[in-house]
Length: 187
Image (cartoon, rainbow, N blue to C red):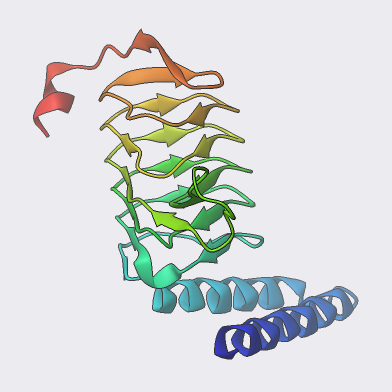
């Protein structure tokens, strides 16, 4: 009940800010309102997640379920909109890029139970440093994406991704090993 009220208040505030933004275009204050809106949204995002590094921007339209179980490293960029369901815990490393319309789901249901309703299974998702997740990719529960990996657009990742590889497809499969300088492997 508290989360629903909190969501409704935030939704109402965003609608009011959007309305004021529309009105201020006539007066020349649109840039100020856009900046203010970005600061409010970003500071609210920082305060809600378990841990958040430096230089992280929460774009409009981003949805985070269970933000208290989300850990984000430094220099992480999210496309608009990204959906993160962190009920089973999600850890995102440093310098990670997650493109538009991507989804990370750390919760699932048990298909062997009848009825499936109420059979939540929580599995941690770990995205290591320097990962790029392409547009529309779906990361399923229990997956670890290795350092320097690339997940192609529209891929559905249901198994671990080795470091410095490129995966694409449904289900995601390794298509290529990335060639990286030796210095990148040491840092």
